[in-house]
Image 1 (tube, rainbow, N blue to C red):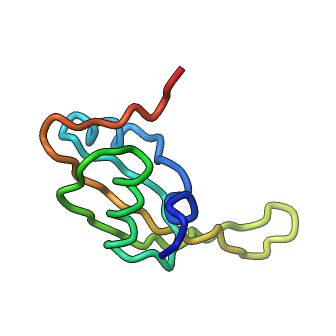
Image 2 (cartoon, rainbow, N blue to C red):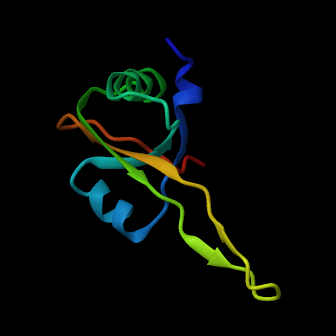
Length: 96
């Protein structure tokens, strides 16, 4: 089994992810090779919560064009996990 800190890379900070937090769902950028059971175990180990469901999605990198040369490149692809927690559990992502 992988180290939980290698599975979860960082939380996603966006308006949509904040809206999902009200429904007790949290979004993370994860290792592209991580499976759903590995993500499930990593979240439970790091944050000490119980996870009900894990949904994953692979996002392709966007095409970007260089202004000066006109060459087309790509941004990096990423894998995201939306984790649903049990009733009463929560994660404080921005601790003081």
